Picture 1 (cartoon, one colour):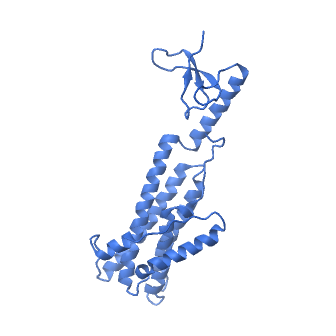
Picture 2 (cartoon, one colour; picture 1 turned 60 degrees about the vertical axis):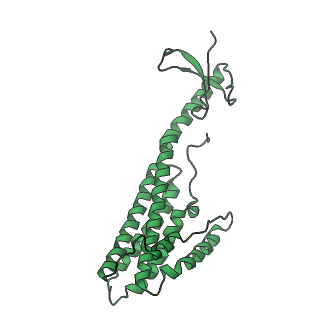
Picture 3 (cartoon, helix red, strand yellow; picture 1 turned 90 degrees about the vertical axis):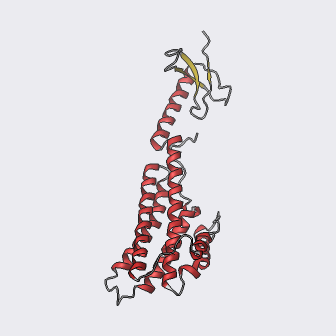
Length: 252
């Protein structure tokens, strides 16, 4: 168990969900500049809302990652906002296609499958991360450009929908994993409680001779059984709990 209740945070640039959302953002800005000239959208309302939704998705993943170390609950809420922003953008693309009497691609459509199967390279960088990440995203944008920046805006809009759905799916899986981690290991409050208990038990063990744990070597501390045939009876429990659940009988 770490000596700090604050868990790791950051590292969002390695997340597939974030990198796909970056593609969505850059593709959306290019699509809107091309499809919604100021003469047809003088107040910039349509393009502004679409670009704003794409930006919201990207930035909420960034903020969620920053809050990951102290509040998994906040992280989940921010990722949910990001997912909602992607769904809003998908709805705008859907409405634009239908407004132009164009069908959305079926999942059985060869074009849909090709865009859905187009891979995104892993991103690994230890130094000069901002520079290396910009190179990575530009390279990936060029890989997807034949679809997302196609001369035919109908193809570009459909391809954008496919990428949005991929990003949404990745976000859902990411949120599900975080929720499972919270269930198994607890959040910030639970880690604080565990650390306080461990420090208290170590302090108590230092005042009274206690055996070392045979399993992990940590000092043991006195505890009482809460249930079962030995309820109320003292025993030695490892201060490394819950990682180590070893116990020993107290010799009388």
